[in-house]
Figure 1 (spheres, one colour):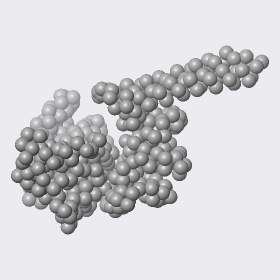
Figure 2: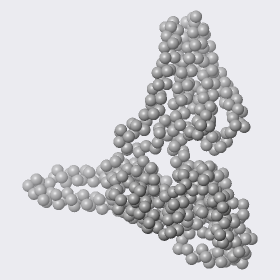
Figure 3: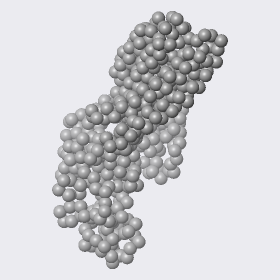
Figure 4: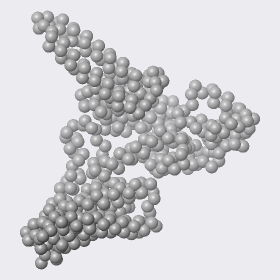
Length: 490
């Protein structure tokens, strides 16, 4: 890693600023090379080619120097934000010894694009300096022969770590754990521990505690660094160690572990196998990645996207990613249109119904979306279960009923005012009150039920939920509004 990039102060705008600067350099390169090309005389093509080559290399050197100054995460941000041709041009300028750490920072879709552009030798050179847990993270995207070559280049201990990391599901604690950690015995003094720590060139990242194990590596507890520093050097580790430690199993869900980190303000936590042995640790940097990925997945699922999408993927690939729920939405739209068609006779009698019915569907959709968002969040946090589900349903129905009466009355008054003077004005006003109230209750029921049902059947509670909610509030809104209108305008 570039030392200047490490020592330079960082701020929240660094990544965006780097993107703007790289885009500026690319634009400058295109403009100047175009000018040079147009100004050269065709009489001496060799001289023209030489000048163009020198200008091109000068700009590549400038851009490469800029990339060398950036943190790997900032380079990843830049690559994800560039169109495919510019992305590949910038990727070719990244130093090969930084390729691996940058690949780790990229989103899956962009990482796959770059890996496909590299041959086996380039991939091996990019990843051979990575730790076993980092290689395991990239392994699903790497060619098999590269993974086998990397495994053979590792020490016996590292090879076993790689095998262990790859044996666990990607979204489990075992698939996310770090093998770099400091372990000590409980029968030594703090002075011995301090001397031991001074032998390290640097401590593993996110080291806020050292783990206490016995001679068979069974976990005993932890020694927080603050206790190590504030207690007398002659004190035994067993006297000040923390025995009440959150322990994780490698098969625990990574997102549930992330919630525990948030709840207890943890920086690291030990990972213990069924026999009680310490096999790794989960750190806060992985937890942040888990939370970010889960949030992105929920956001994409709610919109009906099947998977993470490269912003500059081909039109065909992006279109395919959006097909599933667009198809579902088309079917539900036709269903809603047939609901309206059923009441064509009523609409022909009172044309005003056609202008008012979208209001009923729209406000219920918004209210249901509020309920659904709250429900998805609560399910993600584990706050909703069978014991409190009925209470939550009753509460949301009560809220929807209250809001329906309030805002339905407002809508009814507006409808009455719009058609004041006609024989149907007061009926339209009453119709709006009843339809809005009933459809808000329907929206609340769907907002609570859909995420719960999806979770019960083992699916993501956010998967296509907004599409299903829109379908229901539209269809039921039209049905309720026009059904009541049919009764009122016989």
